[in-house]
Amino acid sequence: MSASGDLRDLYQDLILDHTRKPRNFHPLPQANRRAEGHNPLCGDRISLAFDVADGTIREAAFEGSGCAISVASASMLTEAVTGKTVEEARRLLGAFLTQTAGAAGTPGAADVELGKLEAFAGVREFPMRVKCATLAWRALEAALAGGQPEVRTE
Amino acid sequence: MTPGSTVIEASAATVAGTERVDAPPYDLDAVRAEFPILQETVRGRPLTYLDNAATTQKPERVIAAVADCYRHGYANVARGVHALAERATLAYEEAREKVARFLGAEAAEEIIFVRGTTEAINLVAGSWGRANVKAGDEILITELEHHANILPWQRLCEERGARLVVAPIDERGEVPLEGIAARLSSRTRLAAVAHVSNVLGTILPVREIADLVHASGALLLVDGPQAAPHLAIAVRGLGCDFYAFSGHKAYGPSGIGALWARREILAAMPPWQTGGGIVRTVTFEGTEYAEPPARFEPGTPNLEGAVGLAAAIDFLETVGRPQVAAWEKTLTDRALDRLSDIPGLRLLGAPRERASLLSFALEGIHPHDVATILDGEGIAVRVGHLCAQPLMARLGLPAVVVRASFALYNTLDEVEALAAGLAKAREVFR
Image: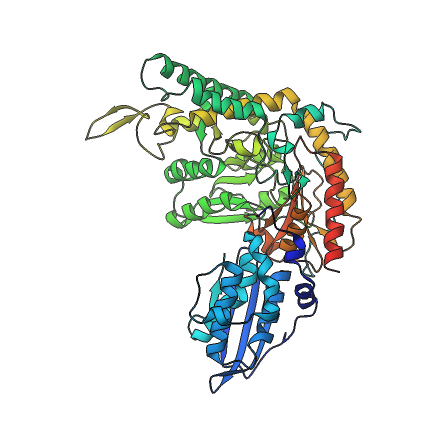
């Protein structure tokens, strides 16, 4: 871990608020896109469900359990992608991974406003915790691709 | 914590026969001064290292022994006749004798140097196991074993059509002898048990287990890395047939450990890995292998590791193993006492004989978040499934827990810092 990492950068108030009161935390029976993020090393398991119609995410929800960071990240993800087109969600995903995990830039991601999701910028100072923040986003990636139903991060 | 888990709250019992002390029975400041890492800060705070069951820090004399070996005494062991080769070979064999005394072995020839406990157990499974375990035979382990003492046996059983039999733990996290006795039979070839559980801290009654196992005609292997730095070990007194431990958990270097086995058992075992240095004669038609221990140490050995391990044993014995046990009991009792005052903290297991480690979960807070908060205070603990997934499942636990483990250099102030750090974690996630 980085010596410069300050715990206040990691556990920001906004993140802790979502940990305590996860938004869109419920089943979504009408969902037509689903994926699960699972980290077997820490037991975190986040199931995402989306109701997509006409290329737009009408509703997003999640279930599961995990650490403060992975739960808050999933909660804020569902808020952020609701109402976005699949293409917009992909760009948001790219921008989030670039900010949080230092992933190589995704086309179009540089122009994306992360807004509240900037709260996760501090996670980069804690390399051991990056996978917690990205777990739900990797699942989003899989759900939008419609392929693998379970994503693992270790 | 999942309801319905059967493990009850912890008691303060630790090593039987070891009395708690009011003050360190050795010069704790001087001991701490020997560890360069303990002079450093982490995140601007003094390092509080409570991850000793994962690995211990290294004293200056171990670091110096490894460096001196490279500077003044390095050559290939048991090959060549030049002065350095002689020095290296003598140092390696002296280290073997030191390990033999450390374990109470009858002779240095009973000690095989290995990379660590994992390799030692794989060696026994791959050599003794393949020579002796047949279809329909059974290997007995317990529910609290580390993956390193499960997987080699699981694989051997799969290969041979043998059966892996598991003796249960009880609600205290102990392994009742009746459960072992009930699972031993004429089919049992070997029992493999931990000396100390790396999750629960339970000290297993190895002597009593050995008697049961031998009465059924089987052999006993003891997985000892969590015991070696804390308990006095006398393999002949324990009555086991194989004993394995790792140097790095006992203040020594990583990449070195030892397997002890009774001489007559080793003599009948075929080589496991093969290569240079383990033979009498080689032809393309066949090979005559050397006697133990050389038969089991192919390739250039880890001389600097062996020399470092010998220095670690010297260090441990200079501080005094009974004194270390007494101080670690004091630290562990204090930790059990402080942690039991923290609301929502759930200790795993309540073994009546416990080594100096304890695992726990804080209600409503993920163990990774607990460990990150503690890290912010400069406190290093372990978090994870502790390489004991079957035990976690048996306890009905979430996949991971937090473990604090104490070593001879820890202080009561550090135990208090742990308790304060946990109170802070509760505050952050209130």
